[in-house]
Length: 232
Image (tube, rainbow, N blue to C red; front, side):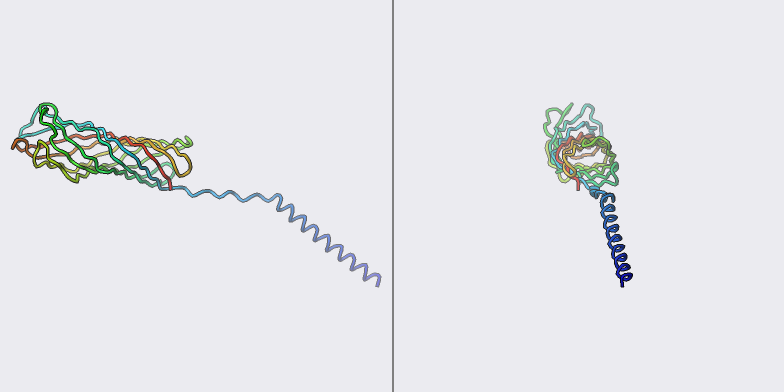
């Protein structure tokens, strides 16, 4: 009987010792196990730029009247202000595709050179747009500069006669060069400054004093914009 009691006592002591060792081992494992890595926020592929834009033209014209060149003829296109937006998608942190478009500004063609004194030759309302391939520079923190290049279009919605009657202005296709920067306030919101130089030509026709005319017009606007940017 004494032997049985001794064996039971030894067995219970062993069980208690094993339980204590397991508990201590669990505490040690919990104390020294590495913390799970912090979750990384999803990369924001889309961006949106909105804000006012000013158009400053580098205009000139080649004018023909009755089939002959009119030397010294020129035009002036006053600067205009519009509202523009650009939406784009980041393929990776450096490369993005952006589509820019603006509310159609009213463009005036004012007579200059030998045409001075004829006033406003006509007006046209056209919607500018561009598709840009962009490279975004990284490593500057909140300051994020970029450059871009791509095709541009000017879609003419309507024309208004001035001194020229039956004015017609053709749609125009060209190339846009872009440079700008974002300054991010947080991971989603920021402000931006953007400049686009658009190489753009168009053609016009009508009649001036009963004489049919045709014109090749260089527009080449510099589009300056600033506003609010959003990444999502």
